[in-house]
Image (cartoon, rainbow, N blue to C red; front, side):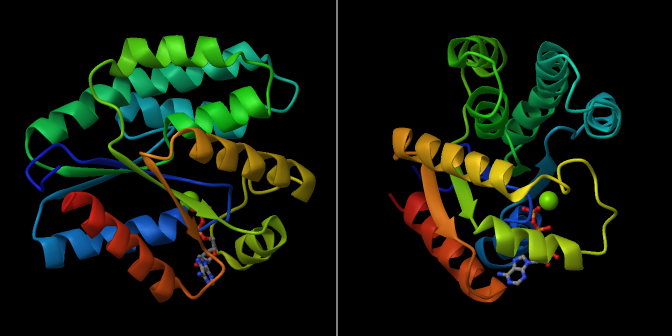
Length: 211
Ligand SMILES: Nc1ncnc2c1ncn2[C@@H]1O[C@H](COP(=O)(O)OP(=O)(O)O)[C@@H](O)[C@H]1O
Ligand SMILES: [Mg+2]
């Protein structure tokens, strides 16, 4: 892997784990230090239609909604978004995406009732030839994550209000997924100051690029 190869990097982790903070810092590092074009995006979302679907999923669905409705909306958003990601990679951008397929597996499979085969099957229809090359899983103790969210200025949505026990379940799910994908997923502890965490992420990115 060299710097001129496709670089599709995803950030995963529970709410309050520091994804949005660290992804922005890494985008800046790539632009200023690695001097590559960066495209920063997020899921669900990233395109006009997918951002509309995001609003549906976050604001209008609720815990009693049909889980297949949620799954299909998430994949509809991803199918749209994927074409954009592919286009940016083709144009030489490093694409950084806040949440991607591991979130679907953690939330809809491990913490939901969707079979893993179903998720893998639909995911393959979307990205048969372009998977994330590298994933940073940000890990945080849910109580600390909640405490940090409570200080965040952004309005709280249904995911920000999740109870600690559910956050713990999803945290364990992400860790299981990381163990099963050791070649792609790097676990990053976010219990330290932001700058220290960012330095660890940069080090891992450089190690990956120089592999
Ligand atoms: N290492 C850190 N130390 C202290 N506060 C942090 C740290 N990382 C993130 N935060 C703060 O915690 C809150 C949640 O972080 P955020 O990046 O929004 O998480 P996520 O996008 O994963 O939900 C934000 O207010 C952010 O500024
Ligand atoms: Mg965020």
